[in-house]
Each structure stands twice: as structure tokens, then as C-alpha cells.
Length: 316
Image 1: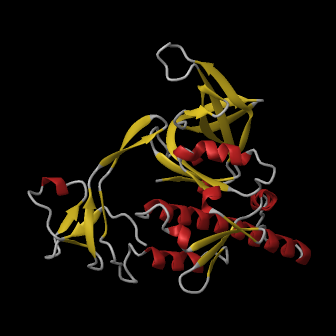
Image 2: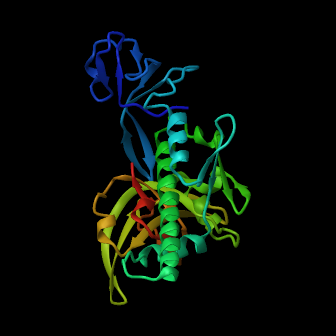
Image 3: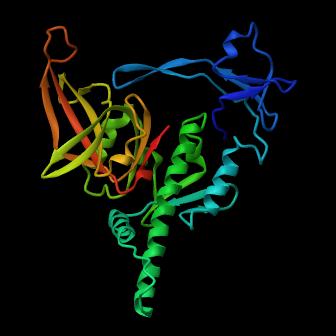
């Protein structure tokens, strides 16, 4: 299990970058820059998201049956150990390189978010107030540890060279029950599966949605200025009840803090973690404008989420 690498080295320790390796007349034998493990180069290629084609930058990856040194910066196992040590027990290290990540319930997360906004470190309080403040600080630290741990785990998942790398070593747990990674992590080609899952009565734990930013807007509603990030919708899929109709799913995330979204730009790839839901006005019907369209009608499903912390949205 290892991460994608943007830089490698030749046998004589000369740095080779993924962006410039193409100018070499012949690719030399390559090694990890930090530990010397054998690597190979994966050329730039394309990937389709939401009906649009995007380029994927070239990168270096480990050769088959090869692993990084334990202390190597690209050693995912070592990074997981570090995350577990700093997670306040949110990510538990088990035996033989296995881990367990506990997902918080919505009420727990909402309550912890409220506590964190009420922390008052005034020097003037009696013993009872001191105990209350300490409890609030402890809850705030737990929320921070939870969100930061989730952020780092998801970043590692995005960096892994195989989509299922972390699935074999991290067990997801909610209320004592194991959760499938397929129920937790969704990329654009599985937005429709995410939307349907969110419609179930027992969909009570947070999930991660990966996607590309389509639009960032400021919208005034009910006297408040809110900020929203909209992701590019999924590719239309044939509706099971009518082959002339297609379904697609869009995702949007809302917050009241403009600064949380300022680093983001259109076309950025992001991961958003938290309590997603089907939008209240969750389906928009659009009739095809051309007779040459693949479908006569499109059902645009929508899912949405409210941010409790800037850590819930990760720019990749």
C-alpha cells in the first residue's frame, strides 16, 4: 500500500519529476527518492467525470511486489500509525496493520459543534463553571480530532495508487456495526448509488463525496448570506422505469463562512465528508431541447450537506 508520487530518482540519485520525464529520450530505471524502492511511471491520461473529460497528471507508483521503507514519506502504513497516535482514539490501531475508524452519529457531531462555538476561557469562573468549561474543551478537542482524522484518512485514500488500498486495512464502524466502504465513499460515477442510499430510513452515518467543483456562489436566503459549492453532476444513466429517460445526480454543500470556501476554485477536485441528505426539492425534470439528444427527458436528482467545520471539505 503506497501513495502516488510526483517525483522519483534515477540510480545515481538524480531527481526526475512526473511533469518533465517525457522530455527524456528513454525512461531510466527509477527508484523512490526517499527509500530507493523500485517505481515506474504512469503517463498522463484522461478520466470522464459528469460527462466531461479531464486530464489526470502522470505520476510514479511502486513496482509490483515492492514496498517502501517503514520510515519513507510515501509509506501509507507509517502515516496511518501517525494519524492513529494523534486521533484521540478515533482511529484505533489493531493487530497486524489493521485499523478501526469510528464514525460519529449526526446528533453527536451537531452537539459537539454547538459546544465548540460556546467555549469561553474567561479567567473568572467558580469550580462548577471550570468543570463545565473543561468538558466543553474536551468535546471540542474530540470534534477536532474526529474531523482532522477523517480528513487525513480521506487524503490518504485519494493518494493511494489503487482505489481499494485502504479498504483492506481500515474497518469503518458506526454504533458498533461494520460499515462497507461502498456505503461510505462515493465518486461521481456512483452519485446515483449515494442518492439512493441517502433515501433509506437507516442512512444515519456520515459519508464522503468526491467530485469536481462546478460553481461557487453566494446566495441570500431568509435574510442570511449563505455560500454554496456545487459539484459537477454525474453522467446521465438510463432510468430503470423508462429507457427514454435518464437520471443524473448533483451535489452541493452549504455554509455561512465565506473563508471556508475561499481556497477553492472552479474545476478543483475535492472530498466532502459529513451528513449528506437528499435535497428538499430533490428532483428537477428537464426536457431535452434537441431531437438528437440521447434521452427525451432528464431527472436531475440532488443531494446536499451543511458544513460544521472547514475540515469537512478537502481540496485534493
